[in-house]
Length: 101
Image (cartoon, rainbow, N blue to C red; front, side):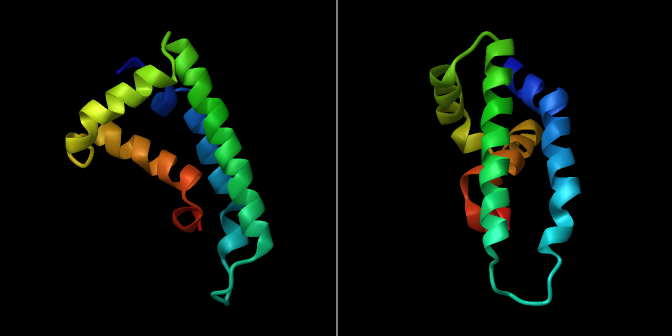
């Protein structure tokens, strides 16, 4: 899928990885209690992911409906294909705060 190539191997993925690298230390704490700063970082990551995903869709000449149809078709194979697993590795933290932290 062209979208996945743009998202996973383009500059957008580099931006997502750079965000994680520059903020991982915030989560290195002694207490289990969630800090408000974590939620704010999650919002920033989610916004970055949405921008990167929209750019990848545009570069692939697709829209969100195409992506939804593709993912619905690929759902049974999500854990088997490396690119789809990699996609989930950046999608899930953007959508699920507890997976993000």
